Amino acid sequence: MHIDVLTLFPQMFQDIFSLGIFKRAIDQKLVSLGVHNIRDYTHDKHHTADDYPYGGGAGMVLKPEPIFEAVESIERKPDVPVILLTPQGRLFSQKVAQELSQHSHLVLICGHYEGVDERVSEHLATDRLSIGDYVLSGGELAAMVVIDAVFRLVPGVLGSEASPLDDSHVGGLLEYPQYTRPAEYRGWAVPEVLLSGDHAQVDSWRREQAIRRTHKNRPELLDKAELSPEEKRLVERLRQS
Ligand code: 6GU
Image 1 (cartoon, rainbow, N blue to C red):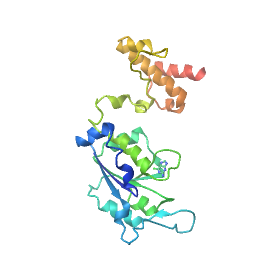
Image 2 (tube, rainbow, N blue to C red):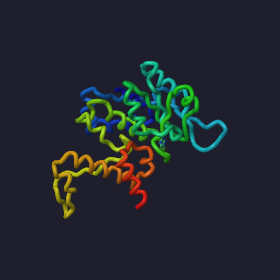
Image 3 (cartoon, rainbow, N blue to C red):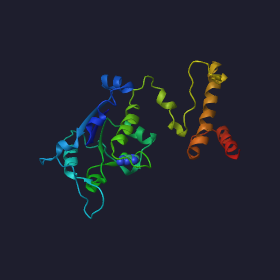
Image 4 (cartoon, helix red, strand yellow):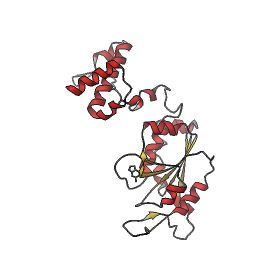
Protein backbone atom coordinates (compact mmCIF):
# COMPACT_ATOMS: atom_id res chain seq x y z
CA MET A 1 0.00 0.00 0.00
CA HIS A 2 1.44 3.37 -1.04
CA ILE A 3 -0.04 6.70 0.06
CA ASP A 4 0.94 10.04 -1.47
CA VAL A 5 0.16 13.14 0.64
CA LEU A 6 0.03 16.70 -0.72
CA THR A 7 0.61 19.32 1.94
CA LEU A 8 1.93 22.83 2.60
CA PHE A 9 3.75 21.40 5.67
CA PRO A 10 5.67 18.28 4.64
CA GLN A 11 7.81 18.48 7.82
CA MET A 12 4.74 17.51 9.84
CA PHE A 13 4.91 14.01 8.31
CA GLN A 14 8.66 13.53 8.84
CA ASP A 15 8.90 11.20 11.83
CA ILE A 16 5.37 10.23 12.60
CA PHE A 17 5.26 6.98 10.60
CA SER A 18 8.86 5.95 11.26
CA LEU A 19 8.14 4.94 14.86
CA GLY A 20 6.44 1.95 16.47
CA ILE A 21 4.60 -0.59 14.32
CA PHE A 22 4.96 1.46 11.14
CA LYS A 23 8.76 1.49 11.27
CA ARG A 24 8.89 -2.28 10.70
CA ALA A 25 6.06 -2.11 8.15
CA ILE A 26 7.95 0.53 6.13
CA ASP A 27 11.29 -1.35 6.41
CA GLN A 28 9.53 -4.49 5.16
CA LYS A 29 7.98 -2.44 2.33
CA LEU A 30 4.44 -3.40 3.35
CA VAL A 31 3.52 0.30 3.30
CA SER A 32 5.14 3.50 2.04
CA LEU A 33 4.41 7.20 2.23
CA GLY A 34 5.27 9.87 -0.35
CA VAL A 35 5.08 13.44 0.99
CA HIS A 36 4.81 16.25 -1.57
CA ASN A 37 5.03 19.99 -0.92
CA ILE A 38 2.21 21.80 -2.77
CA ARG A 39 4.45 24.88 -2.88
CA ASP A 40 6.90 23.01 -5.15
CA TYR A 41 4.22 23.12 -7.87
CA THR A 42 3.87 26.91 -7.90
CA HIS A 43 5.62 28.91 -10.66
CA ASP A 44 5.91 32.48 -9.33
CA LYS A 45 8.96 33.67 -7.42
CA HIS A 46 7.08 33.90 -4.09
CA HIS A 47 5.70 30.34 -4.43
CA THR A 48 2.16 31.56 -3.83
CA ALA A 49 -0.19 28.73 -2.93
CA ASP A 50 -3.18 30.78 -1.68
CA ASP A 51 -5.20 33.83 -2.72
CA TYR A 52 -8.17 35.97 -1.61
CA PRO A 53 -11.66 34.49 -1.86
CA TYR A 54 -13.84 35.69 -4.76
CA GLY A 55 -16.88 37.40 -3.29
CA GLY A 56 -14.92 38.58 -0.25
CA GLY A 57 -14.78 37.27 3.29
CA ALA A 58 -12.15 36.36 5.84
CA GLY A 59 -9.08 34.24 5.23
CA MET A 60 -7.34 32.83 2.21
CA VAL A 61 -8.19 30.01 -0.18
CA LEU A 62 -5.76 27.44 -1.63
CA LYS A 63 -5.30 28.00 -5.35
CA PRO A 64 -6.26 25.18 -7.71
CA GLU A 65 -3.22 25.16 -10.07
CA PRO A 66 -0.48 23.85 -7.73
CA ILE A 67 -2.81 21.16 -6.37
CA PHE A 68 -3.87 19.96 -9.85
CA GLU A 69 -0.23 19.94 -10.99
CA ALA A 70 0.97 18.11 -7.86
CA VAL A 71 -1.67 15.37 -8.26
CA GLU A 72 -0.98 15.13 -12.01
CA SER A 73 2.76 14.67 -11.30
CA ILE A 74 2.01 11.52 -9.31
CA GLU A 75 2.09 8.41 -11.43
CA ARG A 76 -1.18 6.60 -10.75
CA LYS A 77 -3.71 4.20 -12.25
CA PRO A 78 -7.13 5.64 -13.20
CA ASP A 79 -8.96 4.01 -10.25
CA VAL A 80 -6.68 5.42 -7.50
CA PRO A 81 -8.79 7.42 -5.00
CA VAL A 82 -7.83 11.10 -4.73
CA ILE A 83 -9.12 12.19 -1.34
CA LEU A 84 -9.52 15.78 -0.14
CA LEU A 85 -9.33 16.15 3.66
CA THR A 86 -11.92 18.76 4.56
CA PRO A 87 -14.42 19.39 7.38
CA GLN A 88 -17.07 19.34 4.62
CA GLY A 89 -16.31 15.71 3.72
CA ARG A 90 -18.17 12.52 4.57
CA LEU A 91 -17.33 11.17 8.00
CA PHE A 92 -14.28 8.89 8.29
CA SER A 93 -14.91 5.65 10.19
CA GLN A 94 -13.46 2.16 10.67
CA LYS A 95 -15.66 1.05 7.76
CA VAL A 96 -14.18 3.72 5.47
CA ALA A 97 -10.68 2.72 6.66
CA GLN A 98 -11.45 -0.89 5.68
CA GLU A 99 -12.69 0.22 2.24
CA LEU A 100 -9.58 2.34 1.65
CA SER A 101 -7.25 -0.45 2.81
CA GLN A 102 -8.44 -2.54 -0.17
CA HIS A 103 -6.66 -0.13 -2.52
CA SER A 104 -2.92 -0.41 -3.22
CA HIS A 105 -2.51 3.35 -3.76
CA LEU A 106 -4.19 6.47 -2.33
CA VAL A 107 -3.60 10.19 -2.86
CA LEU A 108 -4.50 12.54 0.03
CA ILE A 109 -4.79 16.32 -0.32
CA CYS A 110 -4.55 18.41 2.88
CA GLY A 111 -6.74 21.49 2.79
CA HIS A 112 -5.68 24.68 4.57
CA TYR A 113 -6.57 28.28 5.38
CA GLU A 114 -10.27 29.00 4.99
CA GLY A 115 -10.54 26.35 2.34
CA VAL A 116 -9.54 24.97 -1.03
CA ASP A 117 -10.79 26.24 -4.39
CA GLU A 118 -13.97 24.25 -5.03
CA ARG A 119 -12.72 23.06 -8.45
CA VAL A 120 -10.26 20.77 -6.61
CA SER A 121 -13.15 19.07 -4.83
CA GLU A 122 -15.32 18.97 -7.95
CA HIS A 123 -12.88 18.05 -10.72
CA LEU A 124 -9.80 16.49 -9.08
CA ALA A 125 -10.81 14.74 -5.86
CA THR A 126 -12.82 11.54 -6.15
CA ASP A 127 -13.74 11.58 -2.42
CA ARG A 128 -13.84 14.03 0.48
CA LEU A 129 -13.28 12.99 4.11
CA SER A 130 -13.68 14.66 7.50
CA ILE A 131 -12.47 13.00 10.70
CA GLY A 132 -15.13 14.50 12.98
CA ASP A 133 -17.35 17.41 13.88
CA TYR A 134 -14.73 19.93 14.89
CA VAL A 135 -12.48 22.25 12.89
CA LEU A 136 -8.72 21.75 12.61
CA SER A 137 -6.44 24.44 11.22
CA GLY A 138 -5.39 22.14 8.39
CA GLY A 139 -5.95 18.72 6.88
CA GLU A 140 -2.55 17.34 8.01
CA LEU A 141 -3.65 15.86 11.33
CA ALA A 142 -6.73 14.44 9.63
CA ALA A 143 -4.54 12.88 6.91
CA MET A 144 -2.32 11.32 9.60
CA VAL A 145 -5.40 9.84 11.28
CA VAL A 146 -6.53 8.34 7.97
CA ILE A 147 -3.04 7.02 7.13
CA ASP A 148 -2.65 5.40 10.57
CA ALA A 149 -6.09 3.77 10.50
CA VAL A 150 -5.57 2.48 6.92
CA PHE A 151 -1.91 1.35 7.21
CA ARG A 152 -2.62 -0.80 10.28
CA LEU A 153 -5.23 -2.74 8.28
CA VAL A 154 -2.71 -3.73 5.59
CA PRO A 155 -2.01 -7.46 6.04
CA GLY A 156 1.21 -8.06 8.01
CA VAL A 157 1.49 -4.53 9.46
CA LEU A 158 0.17 -5.60 12.88
CA GLY A 159 2.14 -8.45 14.43
CA SER A 160 -0.79 -10.84 14.63
CA GLU A 161 -3.21 -11.13 11.70
CA ALA A 162 -6.13 -11.64 14.11
CA SER A 163 -5.80 -8.48 16.17
CA PRO A 164 -7.69 -6.01 13.94
CA LEU A 165 -10.81 -8.16 14.29
CA ASP A 166 -11.00 -7.38 18.03
CA ASP A 167 -10.61 -3.63 17.61
CA SER A 168 -13.14 -1.16 18.85
CA HIS A 169 -15.70 -0.38 16.11
CA VAL A 170 -15.17 -3.71 14.33
CA GLY A 171 -18.55 -5.41 14.66
CA GLY A 172 -20.00 -2.12 15.87
CA LEU A 173 -18.97 -2.33 19.57
CA LEU A 174 -16.26 -0.65 21.64
CA GLU A 175 -13.45 -2.97 22.72
CA TYR A 176 -13.51 -4.85 26.05
CA PRO A 177 -11.13 -3.88 28.91
CA GLN A 178 -7.57 -5.26 28.77
CA TYR A 179 -5.27 -6.11 31.70
CA THR A 180 -1.67 -7.24 32.09
CA ARG A 181 0.55 -8.10 35.06
CA PRO A 182 0.55 -7.53 38.02
CA ALA A 183 -2.63 -9.46 38.95
CA GLU A 184 -3.12 -6.97 41.77
CA TYR A 185 -1.96 -3.34 41.70
CA ARG A 186 -2.56 -0.92 44.59
CA GLY A 187 -5.32 -3.23 45.77
CA TRP A 188 -7.05 -3.31 42.35
CA ALA A 189 -7.38 -6.89 41.18
CA VAL A 190 -7.61 -8.08 37.59
CA PRO A 191 -11.06 -9.71 37.05
CA GLU A 192 -10.91 -13.38 38.21
CA VAL A 193 -12.29 -14.79 34.97
CA LEU A 194 -9.24 -13.56 33.00
CA LEU A 195 -6.95 -15.67 35.21
CA SER A 196 -9.18 -18.76 34.95
CA GLY A 197 -7.78 -20.16 31.70
CA ASP A 198 -11.37 -20.89 30.60
CA HIS A 199 -11.40 -19.40 27.08
CA ALA A 200 -15.15 -19.71 26.57
CA GLN A 201 -15.77 -17.86 29.85
CA VAL A 202 -13.19 -15.22 28.93
CA ASP A 203 -14.84 -14.70 25.52
CA SER A 204 -18.29 -14.34 26.99
CA TRP A 205 -17.06 -11.95 29.73
CA ARG A 206 -15.32 -9.81 27.12
CA ARG A 207 -18.37 -9.71 24.91
CA GLU A 208 -20.55 -8.58 27.83
CA GLN A 209 -17.99 -5.93 28.87
CA ALA A 210 -17.88 -4.63 25.29
CA ILE A 211 -21.67 -4.27 25.31
CA ARG A 212 -21.73 -2.60 28.76
CA ARG A 213 -18.99 -0.16 27.77
CA THR A 214 -20.68 0.67 24.47
CA HIS A 215 -23.97 1.25 26.34
CA LYS A 216 -22.21 3.61 28.76
CA ASN A 217 -20.03 5.62 26.35
CA ARG A 218 -21.58 5.29 22.87
CA PRO A 219 -25.19 4.11 23.34
CA GLU A 220 -26.15 5.06 19.76
CA LEU A 221 -23.76 2.39 18.42
CA LEU A 222 -25.87 -0.40 19.95
CA ASP A 223 -28.70 0.22 17.47
CA LYS A 224 -26.49 -0.96 14.60
CA ALA A 225 -24.30 -3.54 16.42
CA GLU A 226 -24.42 -7.22 15.48
CA LEU A 227 -25.93 -8.86 18.61
CA SER A 228 -27.28 -12.31 19.48
CA PRO A 229 -30.82 -12.57 20.95
CA GLU A 230 -29.27 -13.00 24.42
CA GLU A 231 -27.09 -9.92 23.92
CA LYS A 232 -30.13 -7.94 22.79
CA ARG A 233 -31.84 -8.87 26.08
CA LEU A 234 -28.78 -7.59 27.98
CA VAL A 235 -29.03 -4.29 26.11
CA GLU A 236 -32.74 -4.05 27.04
CA ARG A 237 -31.87 -4.60 30.73
CA LEU A 238 -29.10 -1.98 30.61
CA ARG A 239 -31.45 0.53 28.99
CA GLN A 240 -34.14 -0.04 31.62
CA SER A 241 -31.83 0.24 34.66
CL1 6GU B 1 -10.30 16.65 7.20
N1 6GU B 1 -9.80 19.10 7.99
C1 6GU B 1 -9.92 20.12 8.85
N2 6GU B 1 -9.32 21.28 8.59
N3 6GU B 1 -10.65 20.07 9.96
C2 6GU B 1 -11.26 18.91 10.21
C3 6GU B 1 -11.17 17.80 9.37
C4 6GU B 1 -10.42 17.94 8.25
N4 6GU B 1 -11.90 16.81 9.89
C5 6GU B 1 -12.42 17.29 11.01
N5 6GU B 1 -12.04 18.54 11.20
